[in-house]
Image 1: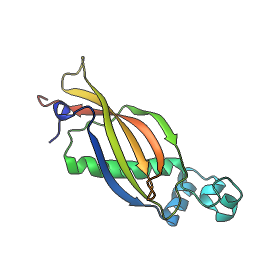
Image 2: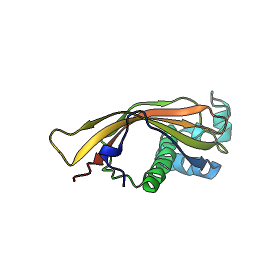
Image 3: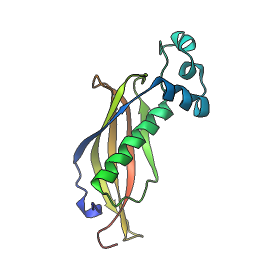
Image 4: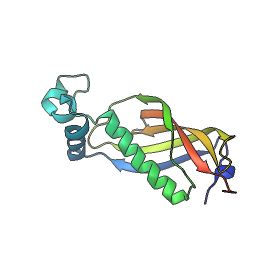
Amino acid sequence: MQYFEDITVGTKSAFGSYTVTREEVIAFAERYDPQAFHLSDEAAAETHFGRLSASGWHTCAMTMSMLVGHLKASEQAGLGSPGLDELRWLKPVYPGDTLRCETEVLDKRASNSRPEMGSFRSRMTVFNQDDVAVLTFISIGLIRTRGA
């Protein structure tokens, strides 16, 4: 089990593989982001996207799926997250793209008021199959201390 004390600033991790499908792009958009360029090839062709593209929120959800899989595999004593900072959708994500993640721990801090936990910040970068960055954000993770 990985605890707060085990987190090292500067640690980098690479993980995940998620292939985006056309059906998933459209289903997500229909439910959560029904803009025409996420729903229709014809509408998307008339925009700067040029073709059907995934919602940025869908890209975040796919990233979360890869992240949770990674955290389960590393058996981290995670306690969720109070949020994230600096979310940027850098490039469109298209059906057929295969995404992967890289993180780097930026800093960590023990809680003054809750000795059973600490927090750490990591920069997440998501790349497509061409190693082009498509998404970045800084995540804030809460994690148990070893003595908890």
